[in-house]
Image 1 (cartoon, chains in turn red, green):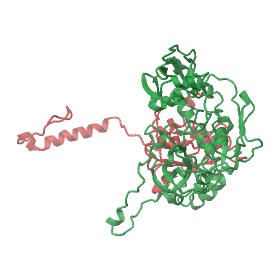
Image 2 (cartoon, one colour):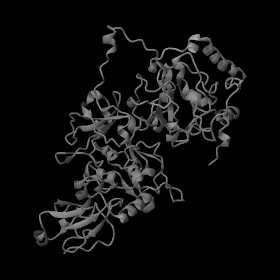
Image 3 (tube, one colour):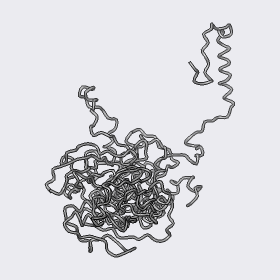
Image 4 (cartoon, chains in turn green, brown):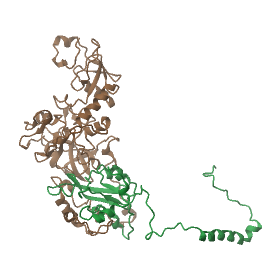
Length: 184
Length: 414
């Protein structure tokens, strides 16, 4: 049979030589490699205290965007849900009533918007499909939890903080990448 | 012989000329030859060939007499007028209004002039049409959207403000968005020809032209709902379906019922989500027009369309065939039968223990709340009620705090 890789080595079935039967030299050889790593630079990062820089294309937890006046961008068009390969996104739309113009940008909005983080594969296709700049994948990791039900993210979990009512949280939520992006 | 199909139609011809004409006209469209009866329009001859040869039509509707000739999307080039007079027609002609002549040679997709003109027509149609497909209920089954994908430009050259109108209710079931209207006149023909008396039409002229009922006069005839099916864009939409769901999340099935109205054919397409009937429309043929049954167009009455919103009202025949290129067929199982649940059988009657039932946690697609039963578009009030079974409002999992916006929080109380 043809080997799948060039790195594969055939197992030798020959009887062991004297050196191999001695056993200890092989042990020492192995331990030498182990101990030599003590003097090498540690690649581990102590995660919560120290954080690695994000790649500019890192895809983390989704956020639902607001415009500069704090109105929700999402119009529940369903393109993210139809683009989602994991079928993680569901939503229900409602009509904007008179008096709600400061809350929602368009006449239709997502009354319910849910992402099942157990299903989400963070591919970013929802972000690409969105015609309204409403959904973005942020720099946040999906936090761990003990219960499955904690991973059904509703609108209160996804909506970005209000830019005028809570500018500090909004700025924090934008992350480091936002200011690097060119403003169109 | 006669040269111009535009100026003289077959039906208007004197009998002595008709006598000399052959029983069938041979016409070549995009190098495909077909025999058609005299008096057929080029568009219908092309439709007889089928496929890409058929020019798109936004205003022409074969079931509505007198329709066509307004949108200019069906323009074709006539390379030779007829065998007797093989001169080409000087300008592109509207194929829905031009009847065939014997030996006529027509170019549709093989002509660069036609493609160019059609691109221009689409640009004109989109001048005042808002690009609000994410909001519009017609998205996914909109003819203008399809046309825009095939012929549209990426950007717009139009610099001025688009004309806007306040949205209007035409009767209790129909929503008119005049901003989206392309003035194809199809709905006025429906009102003229199908319903008893016309109460709406086009008022004003030119750039001010608008479909209206004069003082929003309600239309109270049984077949007014067919205007929704006939509208090529999202100008006339079903108010009972408005914003409830996207077309591509609903599953179309063919169904019929014994409608007492003698004019109603009783054959319809139900748009389901699970067992909920979100919308009822007439069945459409391959050209997006209402299907004909034994020569009669299958219009459905308002009772079938707006009142029968339960699967028990209908005899379901099967899944409507949808082109696999259409977004409507996306992410759907092609059968009606639900696969048999075998877990209980294997477990000897013991219920499977779910680690999590999504309906206990999720706020959407709640099995106890039926959006399709609300007779108007859902609003924040409905969702306030719908969310009452959910506990677990609290701080945001992502930002670690409560949503600040007070009003929004009431909308979100779950």
